[in-house]
Amino acid sequence: MRVFGIDCGTEITGYGVVESDDTGREPRLICKAMGAIRLAKSKTLPERLAQVYRELIAEMERWQPEAVAVEEVFYSVNAKSALKLGQVRGVALLAAACQGLPVAEYAPLRIKSSVVGYGLAKKEQVQFMVARLLELAEVPQPADAADALAVAICHIHTAQTLLQQGAIR
Amino acid sequence: MRVFGIDCGTEITGYGVVESDDTGREPRLICKAMGAIRLAKSKTLPERLAQVYRELIAEMERWQPEAVAVEEVFYSVNAKSALKLGQVRGVALLAAACQGLPVAEYAPLRIKSSVVGYGLAKKEQVQFMVARLLELAEVPQPADAADALAVAICHIHTAQTLLQQGAIR
Image (cartoon, rainbow over all chains, first blue to last red; front, side, top):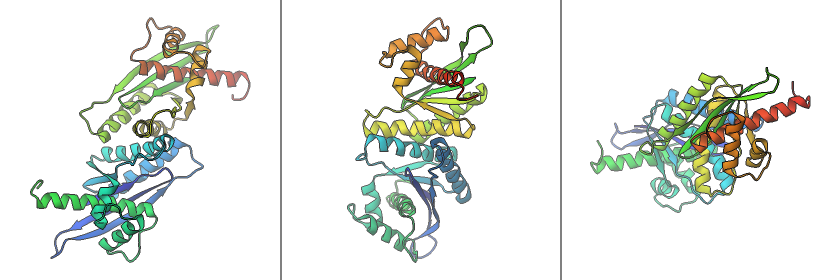
């Protein structure tokens, strides 16, 4: 199973591709790719949105994931920030739809629980555990890429749990 | 000059194509097309965003406008609504960018001033004046299409004013 995680942001949108390898004695998680799309401030908003869209489509075509995972938005932000974030998020969800990929959304608490085992874990703990689960020598940079890998891991863990329960095959 | 106006909404996104005809003794405004994209509630969010994107791209390709005009978002809405609206708006702005069209944004007050001559005009007054300026027998339906025509008219009026002032050629 290969999952494309996206962490949408107004300035930086992170992505990460995680694959589960169930061929060995113990299931492993492999980081196939990660990166961050930094939006040029000199560009207009429509141009910035086109940049996010094109880069996400290019990475999805390159890595051929089976699903996309994104974080549910936490509404403590104000309306102005929510609108800006929504514009980027809409384009990211569109990219998934145009590639024919199903999209799964996970609440921040759920992602932390899935990666660290504790829903109120700090951001740094999540990033440390992402590196450990994916057997990376260092914590993924920037943090947006690490967050994207975290939501992809959450999706794989959720799918594995459902499989074990016989809920999906 | 042909302008494609868009009125983004979470459930219905209106659009309208307005052309200025400066060949006669008096400049005229012509409504070339108008419509509304109603989002199926049975679909997932990514599917709905893909529907908006595809329909807008199809209409832009059909009508070959020179510019796109949208309303600036009024921040009195709450963060949850702003995020939802932002997702649709991001996709609409992306459609314009992918077609290589410049996007102009106008504040609600500016649009009302431009169409009715009074910034605090009521919604019904704006819709009535849209019908009158475009020489339509009836007020455009749904209201979302009328609002899209209004922002397109605002863009044409603004461009004509700038032309008269010699600011652009």
